[in-house]
Image (cartoon, rainbow, N blue to C red; front, side):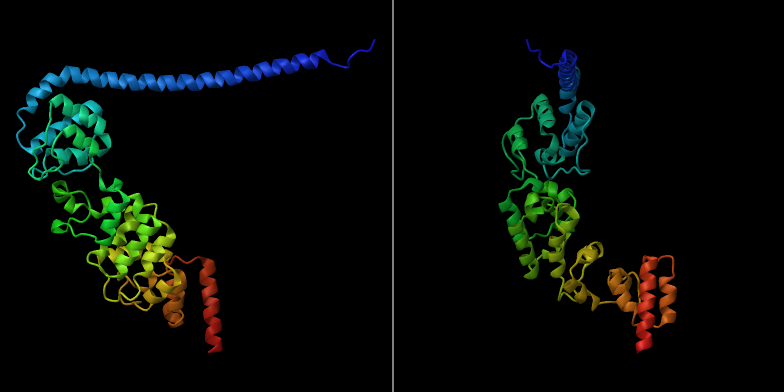
Length: 337
């Protein structure tokens, strides 16, 4: 009779290891489920606390609400409820009577619609009577359907890009008094944060609008400031539109140049270098505001006695290697001259 060459100890050990591995996997799965259940319990507790708070304070709140007469008083009262019950602060610092209650609430609590609607329901605010006909009708439906510029459709963004507007009293950035009044004064930063504005075909229209020198197109230079998703290539394209704009650099374009000059392509930098100044370091095109290769190009044309104090100054941002290479090249050029 033949015997199998099998070690029973090995078989038993393997089976035990498999069982241990299976148990460990089960333990990990149960821990994850336990963590999810704990989070669910905490969330339910928070909702229960809010519900209890509502039940406790609702009668008093409704009574005091009736005493609020102006839009500002009503907004401030709802602000206190949102903060007290939900711990939610309003987004912007402005409240205005002219915009109406609904528009104030829709803008300031755009990212907290569910909580806002629960307050509106408790106070039994049912219909809008805004003198500006802003979302007339049900407050709840209007709050649900209100869309901020950062979430506008591609078509709406395209319309803005092709014809940028000018806001009342120059309130072009930041949601202030006049935006709370109407969308005709929507701040540029709220639209420029929209994802559609950097889509290739929409961004093509941005460039076309600037090149046509359309009215208010200067505001499009702030897109990199308010849209973090913009690419370096798109910033280069914006920079290239500066070519030929001598004498047309305003605050907005100056800020754009200061923050993005290191990204611009060679053609743009060559044009801007023609505008170089040396008499005032606070001027936009002072030679020290250019990338290092252009600083070196500028200094190569200066006497060595003027160059040394500059590159040896502690404010000079060149590396030791860059300084050494520059001086070596400068000396070689002077010998050949």
